[in-house]
Image 1 (cartoon, rainbow over the protein chains, first blue to last red):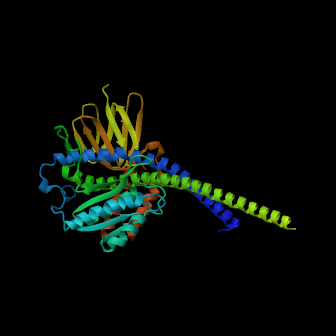
Image 2: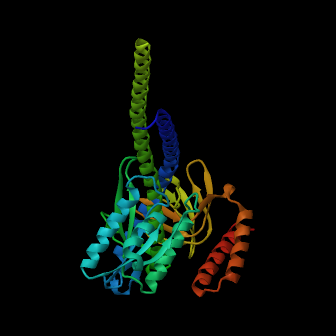
Image 3: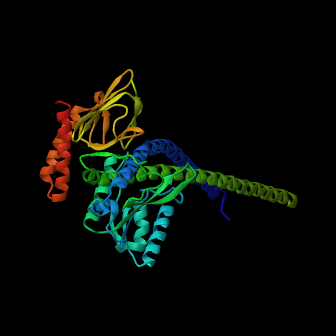
Length: 291
Length: 132
């Protein structure tokens, strides 16, 4: 049975923890607002980009002569999984949800006899994947020192990917990140970026014949690597918003659990205290009676 | 005067979205003006100044590379960088050119050096376009 003093110390410790989680929740909430605004501001660009690219891709008649970034290498043997996670934890299942999706995909691909390579962005995903696929991780990047995510960071990653692709390191590249739906809902998403996949009506240009300056090929040569950077940039921004959303709800839970614990501990503390008082009184009374 | 829809977006945000009467775009093959009913066109941009003329006002925006698409729905410009002329920091650009020049001199790896040299050319072209 712990002494009253021990119990007081424990309650104080729980209260201190609650203060920390509460503060973290509020910091996450304010950062979330900014991250969310940034993610939403980046969406139009990424969407327009896909649309323009889709239009051009649909207009390219001769697929044999088209750049390999658009049509692929013609084989699907080596897959590169670009896994984007956060740098820090304390955010509930955010990181593991992305890693799980990537792992499932990797296992499915390997079961089909394909080769899988990993490119990790963010420390947490790298640490989790390293345990299982140490040898298959060809590169990892940490964005720890980055305060506000700029397009340049995504561009650097994009350039590395394109370079690996040109060296023939892989055939298909899939991007894993968490799409920000709302504060309580973040959806781990897989998106194939090389060769690009056009969804919906992108690529349907309604029979409009475009004129190209300089010519289609030159535009594609510039547009395709750029599209990859844009998609990565967008994924990183969505990830940042999702991260703060996940952290906020995780810390909200932690604060509530701490409150519950404090309530229980205080109750036990008071009961023990009263029991001790009663015991002392009985001792005094029986002592007095004996005299 | 007839108007058409114009979107100017950079990776970070949407800079302009609305009805305009004319836009002058610095295309890589030469500057061109877009009016309502322009023929469908896709082109790359060179670093330069993009001018927007709407009913009442005119805006000048510094753009650095990217794409312009004229379609049935209007004009869309995807710029790598887009900053209004009066907010653009010319001194910072000069500083970047200097930094990049040093980087080019230091870089041993051929692939990286090509990339940096390209970047340097772009920055210099931008500086020239601004008339400094």
